[in-house]
Picture 1 (tube, helix red, strand yellow):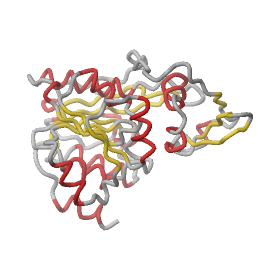
Picture 2: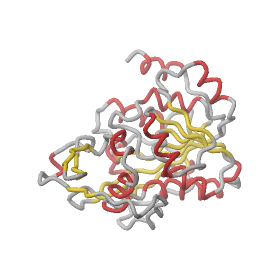
Picture 3: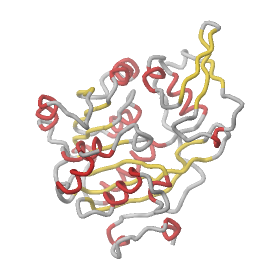
Picture 4: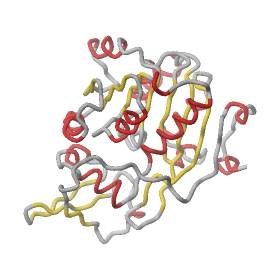
Length: 295
């Protein structure tokens, strides 16, 4: 069985708790159609250094503007979002990222299999960026869609590139939410949390993700993706250990776990992630939250 290679101590009833667990797929599904204006083109240059020599959050590229050459890391989101169409051109055209569509697809399939309707979801999209995942969810017809990101440039880019996708968009630090944000988010009666290509690498810390999860009603849904090594017990990073404990805790019931090609590296090598859909069955225990708050 494919998950034996993960070296995980999986619960004995995992097979009964998952609606479908697929093996890795080399061929991605059709890539999300880009809605940003195709008349905006950027001159992107990849460096000669091989990207495998760098950590995934250290990989960089150059963009040439007015005969000036600027170096940007893949995770320099504020600078990337300031340039209309650059995010899509880099990750979705050149590097063939398929994650928003993949996560949206398995969320829709899992909810349908459970006898429920996607149109009844009130979704909090954490790490929403310029709205790529929001666009997928909007196309599926969710009831409410709330975006959240820690930088204002993300919200501005979403308003610019995908106006009207989100019913509201919060610029907030979920490790230290204000009382007003806490109260406002609670009023949305959220029953689904999504987070795509945002977990790990310091983008969304564990405490921020758990805080967002607290807004999801019990029996609500959670859909996200993570780098394949985060489920490998040989990965001793704090985020990896956190995500493994969370996935197999009593708070979540795992419905779908699938390995797929997230995108290509700069060398054209497939980068594999896991897409997950789970159901929140209970509130997160305080003892789970306390160590994260102390960090």
